[in-house]
Length: 294
Ligand SMILES: Nc1ncnc2c1ncn2[C@@H]1O[C@H](COP(=O)(O)OP(=O)(O)OP(=O)(O)O)[C@@H](O)[C@H]1O
Image (cartoon, rainbow, N blue to C red):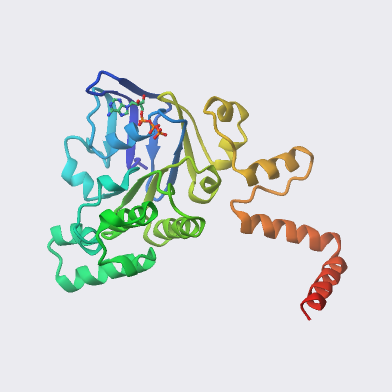
């Protein structure tokens, strides 16, 4: 199977002569994958994404999206990719939130009714239906992120690229965003590529992680493979997710319980063990708890 996206040893020179080389392992993304790119500040993550989007043109190397060079086929590629930029202000252009989300469907010449249904559905799914009439400029950082995401998924793109989508989201919004992204992937087959410094979220949204350090793609693998590789973690100055760290430590001590992706999975693992150890104990605690409530 051919990858949807292929990047091999790209070189870019910014106008101020800063040279960025993204080399090492090839960056390949296959249809339906959920990719996360990790790396310290200045590693080259945004530079890589900007080339995939066709916003930047490499001076050397290979950048292909669906077999095309993005910088030469900007309009064709951008119809297939939704994007949430690191700075949402850069992409919100409508005078009202509604207009901003409706921008691409209007450009595509869809009917007013179709557009209205699409905008309201996507706004509902992101919990922003109540701010559709607002002026985007006055929204909070988190609200702007959601509006930017709404605009990028309203047409159900094949690929969704997000640069730090969780930045400035409150915990509840973050959990909802994770569910939504996973729903877009499982129900609509959307391939997702995300950069984030929010390490605890990564096991929930990644099938495969690429790790970049100073432009070098130094590792690729599942969250388990990456977070158990001490060398890679150190080199890229990462910290493993807290649950991964805890359950890996237990594994090293002989208690191989698996590595949970989120709090719910961790809770179930621990509850199963506690029930196996002493089912009576649980009943006892339960009875005490009920008594206390009485
Ligand atoms: N417009 C620009 N002009 C000059 N240099 C730039 C520009 N954008 C990025 N760079 C430089 O390119 C390198 C890679 O930056 P990039 O923004 O791709 O890193 P990043 O991994 O996305 O970092 P962060 O995690 O901080 O967002 C850095 O050295 C940065 O200073």
